[in-house]
Amino acid sequence: MSQARAVKEILAGMPTSDGAGVKLTRVIGQPRLRNLDPFLMLDRFHSDDPNAYIAGFPTHPHRGFETVTVMLNGRMRHEDSRGNKGLIQGGGVQWMTAGRGILHSEMPEQDRGLMSGFQLWINLPKEEKMCDPFYQDLQPEALAAPGAAPIKTTDLDGKGAARVVSGDLFGVHGPVRNRAAEPLLAHVVLQAGHKIDVPTPVGHTAFFFVNEGSVKIGEKLIKRAEIALLDAGERIVLEAGDQGAQLLLAAAKPFGEPIVQHGPFVMTTAEEIDRAIYDYRRGTLGRD
Ligand code: FE2
Image 1 (cartoon, rainbow, N blue to C red):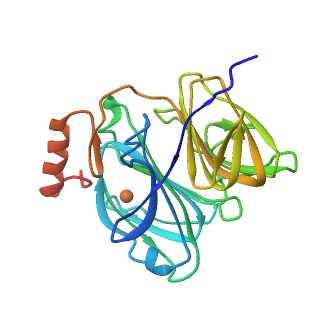
Image 2 (image 1 turned 60 degrees about the horizontal axis):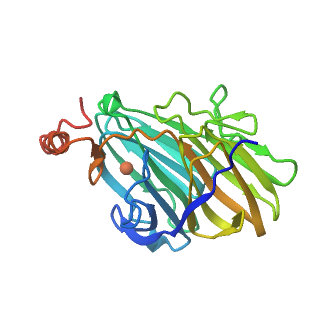
């Protein structure tokens, strides 16, 4: 019997705002959970009040890590300094590797209705922090262009569904591949009482965030809007609570390197941060 991961800690997110005033809940990156190597930030946004999201995220820089935007509801337009443009919407994901630098904007393409989803930041190892930036817009099956790898919805024995963004889950290989942290990332919906058993490399950091409903692991109950940090182990075994569960499930390899963060720049030394600020101020970050 391989070892199932126990719950190490359960935390609620912290309400905050970012960008030009978008209201969101910071789950990873808040004072009680600065980071969770290799995860640097997890924000949840969820509102049907346009005032909570309409200002969006006007042009801003990033260096040294990857940003992953998982859209559940709503439409967000992305444009960046390398000429990329894209629209992500319900069921879609944008995976952006900032590498040595990118300037981008993320703006809502709606002025009413529900906007809901997540942004997750995943670190890059020191030797890849200055890599070429690139991004991938991944659409759900119904919207994917011919030949493009979509985010498929996989039925779980008629008792749930999973959308795998990266890594392997239930025999599905997510479309995002060959990332340094070897991430598993999936959005999973389960009916009440349905149990899943997910193998994970033993040393990988693992967590899940309960977006709706609740989740049980052993005697622990993780409620809506809580994150569960998991101990080391070979499998994640969890069961949906009485109202079912909708969750974001993630695991990835920690790098064990220093994390020096200054807003949207995440490097391993203060000197590298100074360099990022210098490059941004003189206008070369995101343009070389
Ligand atoms: Fe951004």
